[in-house]
Figure 1 (tube, rainbow, N blue to C red):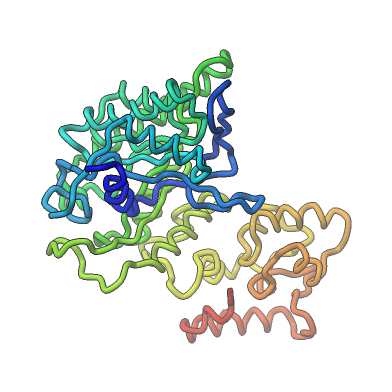
Figure 2: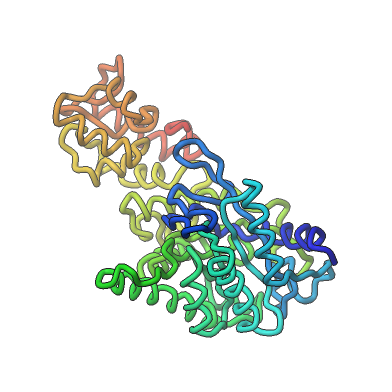
Length: 413
């Protein structure tokens, strides 16, 4: 099979892996080499200066010894199979880079023979690109569950980011739909986390020490293939961020790829649910929310009609309104319509002046949402409204309680 046909098969097979994004790495081009990693990002994303940045995203092979029910590359699926060699991947990466098609490589793989054999192939690709081709661009490698500690350590010394897909939210679901073991996934994740911490400490004393996965690690979680609720998923993500120091948890809406009776019969992938989980994830990472604040056992699913931040605010109306002139930064972040940048601008601007409705619009606050939760000196930020604050708040809560379907209209996008 020629290399073009392999790329057609394996590039298409990689589309289900969404666990790739901006590098967060600054790797200078080696002397006499090619490419450099930049913190602005990679993988079909937009940099701050408007550039579209991309990478070669492919599998090393779609041959796999596992038979995961949700995976298109599972052992029992009758599809065309292919596998690159180490030299072919290196050649493709360098030729695409020289033509300015890509700025890096995202390489995953099915498991052929065993985990160590496959992990060694992936590590050799990264090592050869760095050592022989003098490639300084971004490289993201997938760690194969069950691979040895030494191979994963070697891979991390040549890759910018390395990640292990956790796949499903609970061990019970993993046992139901796959022949993988939880410890085969969590042990490599722990090894990567420990190595990153150790490397940071080492570089504090020896700046010439080689970097280990400078862009950190991430993982991917399939949403909708198993019966876990959003509360379980959000708590799992919180634990991964806290205990393993992950950069990102990616959520992938389940796409039916087989007629296996263990899988739900979905007409379409749960894309809205995936979107809400990303919003909840953002609240935990940047807004200081805990998983238990976003959801609990009484409300285990995210609201499809409104974003998680607005839903939280409606459940906690006793905390509002807050005064825009005196509220701490942490409280401003919890107001629907106020983001991280606009909260920072408010803190700076209010030192110099008394902020008005128009001032907040210019700062970037989405006033259609935020105006219901803010005051200035006890006066509501509703232009042209002379109604007392207590009446406005009473009407707002009453409408939400009596007619939940109208909650979205209170907080239009």
